[in-house]
Image (tube, rainbow, N blue to C red; front, top):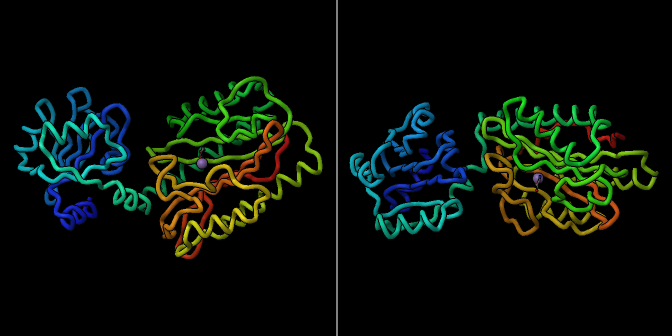
Length: 342
Ligand code: GLY
Ligand code: MN
């Protein structure tokens, strides 16, 4: 919050306002850990105010270091706290057009985008955030292990995906996105929605959870049946390229250059980006693609997930979550990458 307040002062803004209606605003969560509806108002100087509907007041009361406001109009409350709202920083990316217009037209605020600043701030994870992502990865590894052990019981991709959901919920966590289980030719579709009977061949499992609001995102490709020598070669070639790409992750590396170098080694042109930033959101800044000019810094967490997709035939993808450390990187997702036959 201090960093944001410094930015507000630098830009001559009175305050920043973050809003959550239906979809949680990840920046509001970042500052507070609060998941309910409401407005977080951070003045350039002084204490932040969390303004919430009465139904969410008990949850909001758990948050320390803020002034709480409820049961009155936001404008009245801000006037009471003496917060000026003439020039307001808003994260345009997470703000609905309705809220945007309300601030502009009803409240008469002049609005300035602070999305990029928030992206940069959140990209460098604090130690406690890294700890949560690390824990999310550890739980994910454990559930994938159970998935492998139980695979013979699944008849359909939906059943297999439901197992991942059930194991996640049993531990009091939630999935970071709808799990992907793609078998046979379905594996050639990167975001395949589980459907139909489990088919022989490569089986792509792309799965992640949220631990205390922080995501993991891991992909492993297994084989249902017995792979041919050529299939084994295809798998291990891709694994080699994935590990080469991870080897390029270090502070000071320009992400675009990393992607160009990594993608040059792949057999075919990648049909999605090599990876993405990971944190409160499963896809967040920095984006790991060839056009990125962002420089990797210690504390960033990114995924590296090359894939090979042959339409109508098969697909292979291997994804790890990687922390940029002082001198290089640490892979947080540790489940085996040997080609396991299910
Ligand atoms: N794990 C899904 C994705 O990164 O798109
Ligand atoms: Mn991913």
